[in-house]
Image 1: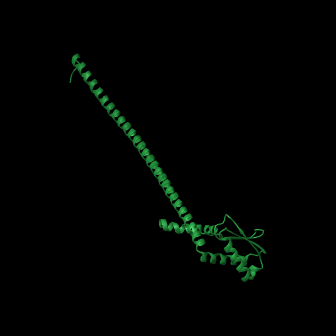
Image 2 (image 1 turned 30 degrees about the horizontal axis):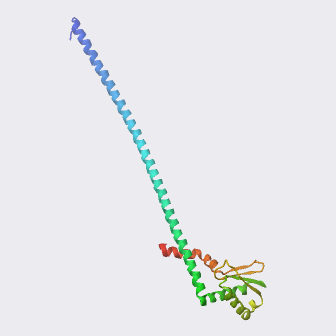
Image 3 (image 1 turned 180 degrees about the horizontal axis):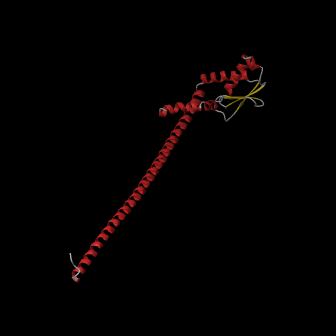
Length: 208
């Protein structure tokens, strides 16, 4: 197309060419800008997604930790309540056993006589002290007198029966120097069975 001889057409041609180039440049710029924009948006979204994932993981961890803490606290609370029930049942059972022994005279006397004879035969001391509670002292003295007459190992010893207000059923025997002590008071005997009794109580209460 010949435009050299026509200034107006020359000007129009230059303008159109310039506008076309501007459109091309703008299109490239727009495409680059769009690419940059999308990349930036994608980066922001990825960062936000990671942040949300981290927050969710932290929340899940916090929740699990809190739930675990609650589970532990609840188990501890239930365990404490169960132990309290077992302790109460043990005290009640101990009291009933002592009351039963003391109130059942034939059984109580047989228990005292059998164990007192065994201890007095066994103890290697010339002087022996026997302590018992105020309610049992006369019964112990009767048994001791019988043993002195019937058992030579007992008759050879010098025996003294004393009252111990702190005792409740049964007796304590010890040498004069207290280097040997036999505890057959009912509280001590039951306490020696504490673990076994509590296991029985636990199985009875909770089926454990």
